[in-house]
Length: 470
Ligand code: MLT
Ligand code: ZN
Image (cartoon, rainbow, N blue to C red; front, side):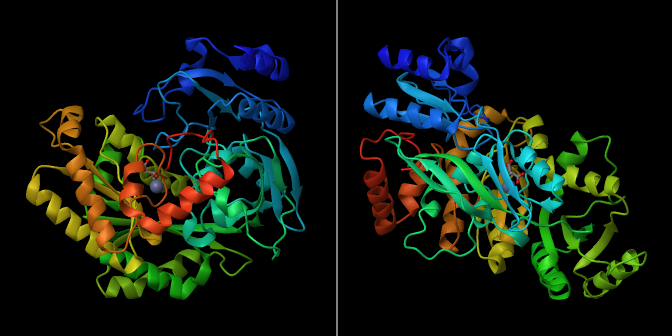
């Protein structure tokens, strides 16, 4: 095929992968829900090459599937099964372009892993607060294309909130570059917002300028057993009232989630000798020298009203970085624990913060009324109103068969209750292939029409990541 020869001449034959054995790993998503086939995988080595690759594809009317670290949960980076789509991998665009310690910004290419971007910020004495379990392999381009959330949204916001500037290659190869990283710029439409969360359907993000923050002097981490889900959000309000904006994370684990992860991580000591029904991992940042050796005493004081009120039943404080990381491992390994048990029917809903307890209660009751032996693995970013209301098959049944038979009904119920409570069916994982029908179902006419109009305006040939999102 002529275009493949042109691509090889452009990026080097070694970076146009054609054999199935070479393209396989690019054609299956992280959860192995989708198995596609690619015409080829092309790996441009510079942003200029990316521009020219996309111009060639545009001229040849080739569909393009952008591919980052492939850690997404919704199949957003997987080609379809036609064998006619070209996968464009950003993995070689892995340069740190600039770090500005005065403006506190970091400019990176799209293929830089989140961990490498964090390390660059750390080396400059600053903090890139975006963080998540997959940070060793997920890439900045994918983080922005899916508007990733992660573990510190409570304090620092999502990937969108952390983006000051963006460079995007449009579907026809034109470069839209706004990497200046200005904190203020009121010159018409803020176009970067269109591409963040667009899942590669409007163009390919090639670089970004991200906000950095002062590094905290220390993090304080408390793992608490709480009376119920409502106590978790009330506890957060109490702690925020005392510590203000320094609270960075408020993560929830149900008893089942905790039991699963404790069974997986046999080397991590459980925080309590008895089992509770609900747990919260709370973390906040300390700046300056407000706390000293009396930190533990201060924390005890902070927690004494919620303990007296019966909201907090028990709590442990991390006294060292090692203890802190052990507590975080409990939270971060819940998805791995579910996987080890045969996988879960995953959900990623959000509701207004004040409704989370009602949502969890109502959804649990309705699911268990219909499937009494389901195992509910509820956990997640409760401080953001975002819970992963995951569902494992009854222990006596085959997980895959159960999912095939009942998965759709279970998910419909989980999503419908979120919708009726003013929530979202996808708080952080995005839409991709997996939730496209849900977007069509729930977005509403005008919103969907506006999205389609934007798509048609920027990608009239429908070449960018076809079949995803819309
Ligand atoms: C998490 O918060 O751990 C993930 O977003 C949820 C998951 O892996 O299902
Ligand atoms: Zn999550």
